[in-house]
Length: 171
Image (cartoon, rainbow, N blue to C red; front, top):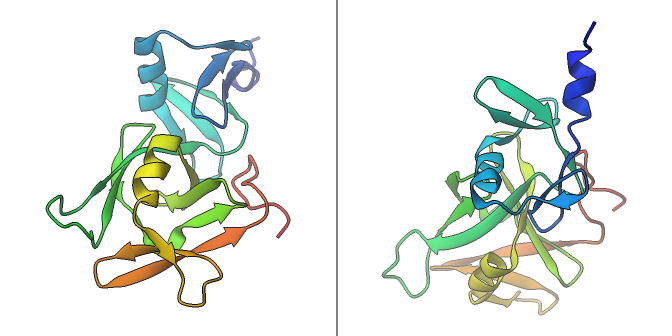
């Protein structure tokens, strides 16, 4: 008798911290396969990360977080000081940035929370650098904030990376 749950849990598909998929330790390099995996990527309400293609699905091992920002765009492309941003995510979904959810881990990685469940989402380098053009020091000079039209959104600093179960480990 087949144990379907065991088969799904042992898919040997992994998502690394740079948003790249691997199968059995080998990078998935075919653009069509990579795109299908991205489109099927989701986080279930219980926090499990899965890939669905048609009616088939399996669990995915993640190194750090299950979602990534691949690019950012101002909501008003004509405004040199945008009041809001749209995020393009790895799974080809777009959503507005909730600026109050931004946080840095150390000095290098930028995250926010996305989706209905508030999934920790890592900014890939091109998206990070595009948004960083609009960072400014906080009024107290102790950190950074995202300039938003007439105001700012302070970027929190965390000292631990998101844990694969979606929680922030050890603050």
